Length: 478
Image 1: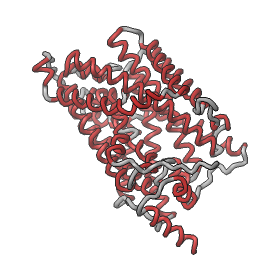
Image 2: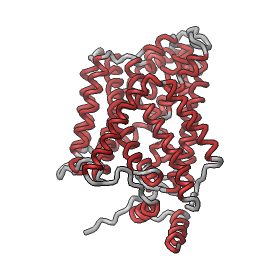
Image 3: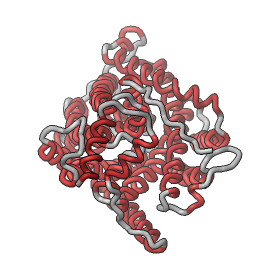
Image 4: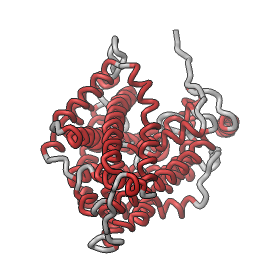
């Protein structure tokens, strides 16, 4: 019997906002916050504000794209219709594989070093232990974890906010005996350090677009998603800046710059042992849940690509008993396992953490540039397609966004070659694979096909459905 079940349109602003905010309390994101503060000192507000400019431009792009195509395919769907499947596959494999391998392993190492900070147990042992636990959860589908994981991010976000606010207002100084330090208004290398940290500050916001694949389950996504994206990004900026200033007031700049757990050191500085303990717990939980989510998400992307004929068929098979894409899960686990060992062997220093973070930042900024290009291409190809959210002055705003993205990449240019090397490997794979299968290397999917697919598989969407039906009727009449 055919399964005609559809995802329900039940999500409103709060759920979408939460999804966009989700990565703000990951272990690497919190580390990046204080590490950038160490690079820019009290001018960190300017560094992260400049970094926010290309991110806001990308948010505008994703808002228009998700309003046009409110389905779960996200960047792959948008790009397949705009510039072709080669670029869509490159965006998915080139970005998300790096995210799981580099950030997933960094999250594991971060949780391991947080445990080591409290207990003295070597980080290598706990990091790999957490990773194996993530694998078992994903293979055997422990339902209780899913229920807990749905609540944890909210609690962690609130705890992070409380530490930031209490530290900012000097509660630790008056109640816990925390001692202020004299940090300079500018780093030692002046504004060169302030502007040079822009690329690193991008990590504060990476992943904000996570709510876009939920468009099929969102009520009025063309209204809700743009509001949620911008509210989340502004919230992230404000919360992180408050925590930066609390940390800078009570922690030496050298510690924030060089420590592999600088966010825990910052929390200890402004809120004493209580702050350090709470931040360690947040880091362990946040790193574990984020890495676990990545270990769940990437195999399902592999599954989707395999079903489209872009990966070997094994990645498209689901285990008959446990109902998980076993091959993809094991490949993702091996990638994270190897990288976690490497990070721990290097001592989990700030330099090694930053290297992995910035490698992903380069690829992700490229993905954001692609999203802006997608909007402009689709406007030219389908000027009359209904756009229930339309970016004003798009060519100007996206020119600023692309220039800002390129500048951010320039500030972390020492990592470009590594990222480009990976993207070249993926590009070669795409060409060879499609040639061997007799498939077009860069097949462009007509937007009509994507629209029909979204309408068939999702619940009725007021306004959008009528507008698209009218557009399709006109298109067919030509």
